[in-house]
Structures are given as structure tokens and as C-alpha cells.
Image (cartoon, rainbow, N blue to C red):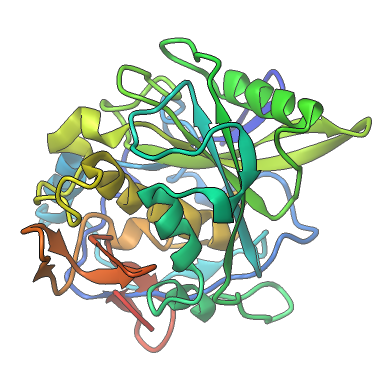
Length: 336
């Protein structure tokens, strides 16, 4: 099921969707933003059964853990391509909206290379990593596999305060203002990650239904209506038990909020890559690749600061959930 809002084309995911913490999982890549249907496949009725949950949501840790322990839950290991849009090469723009509480954020707008925050470090190092390489096991309708590329192209620190509960229409309007003013550059293969601070209920269901989600809307560029991909990235530290790992932050006191945010950020980037419009890669329950491994960590290690991590990205330790490898019998993994 899909729902349209003013200036927004929004797909809706079920409250039974990300709940997949399979013990045995693995990941695979998908394809690029190309001509493809703009609405979800009708066969995905389970994924889009609940109109209360926007976009392709990442459910809270407790929900997933509860579902994973439910012996009655069906356990298929497959994931299927439904012919829709994937990103062969992924670009990411960070939009810091209303002074989120992350440390060392850059001011104004600029290229991703100028973002000295821990989030910026993660975004610059994600592409080319063994972890993101999992997505190369996915492909598009032409059989072309996704590339192990994530370009952190731009940021915008938009200090205008959002409302207490911004809707998708509000988010699209904010992005439109950035495109119109020149603070942001538009690109159809860019995922615009929208970060907000504590106390902002981004999308209306943060902390009750989800920790983050990705979706798409419609903006006007040079007088032409264009699709914009974006991810709603609320401030996970606000819900320590529901939207963080529960482990000590990997980088200690450097920026614990960013340490917790990168997990959901990675989740949404890899899902937007392999299922940009909600019509590409998902399984028979509607789970996207990252949903199938949500809140599972694989092998971890203790960092120099006493935190918990399972990978190194951009020279820093991070704790990031596993992703589903779409090769062989499939499974959750930290690398491919």
C-alpha cells in the first residue's frame, strides 16, 4: 500500500517488517536508480499493511528481539528482486536540521570532505569497506551488480528549528528550500539523510514505532518535478533502550550520540541502495536486506576507550548491525 501526502510520495511499512534477527544471515547488493515503477509491488501487502508506520521503517530493538524469539515466526532465508529501483552507486548528503546534538558538526553547507564530525568520518569511510561490499551481491533488472561505492557528497547544517513532530511533507519542504536556495544540490541517486536533535519526533512515530526510515518525495528542480530519496534519522540517544545497541559507545566520550546513530544510518543507506522506491529487493514478508539482520552484531571487540565495536570504518571503531548477503544460501554478515 502507498500513501501520498502534499509534496510526498510515501510508502508505508508494517509493524511486522524489520523484526528479523536471524541467527544465520548474509547480504547481497542491488541496482541503480533507473526507470522502474514508482509504487510498491502489489505482492508486498504484508510490508505495507500498517498505515501508521511511514516508509521502510527500522523497528525498535525490543520489537525485533521479541519477534526474533517468537518460535511461531516464519523463517525463510531468501530475498527476492521485484524489478524495481536500486542505486548502482550511492551518494549521501547529510542534512543537520535544527542543531542536532552531535559534536564537531560543520556550519553552513559544503562538501562531505569538510565534515569533521564522527558521522562525517563514518560516511566518508563506508564506501569501499568490506561491510558495504555486502550490497554488491544485489543487482538491477539488467543484472548489473551494485558497486561498493558510497560518496559523501555534501552536507547542510540547517539551523532553522523544525517543529516538534515534522511530517514527511515538512521534510520534503525543507529539502526543497535547500535546493531552491542552493544550500543543497539535487541528485536522483543521492540519499538525503535528515538528522534532528533530542525532543524532535521525526515522522511522528519515533521511539514508539521505529528508530529511522527511508522513503521518497517529490521536489521541483528547474520547474520539473523530480523524485528525492531521503532517510529520516531521529536522535537515537533519546531512546537508549529502544534505539541504541545497549553497549558502551565504541568511541567512548568522543561522541556517544553519533556512535549510536551510525547503526541506523548504515541500515537506511543500504536499504535505500537496494530498495530505493520500495519495489526492488525484499523477502516474502516485506523485509529489506538490513531488516533481516536488524540489531544483530556478529563478532565484537572491546575498543581502547572501553566501548564495543565490530568493525573499523574511516580509522574509527564502530558497532553496526550485520547486513544480509544475497549469495549462496544467504545470511547475516559483517563483510563480503
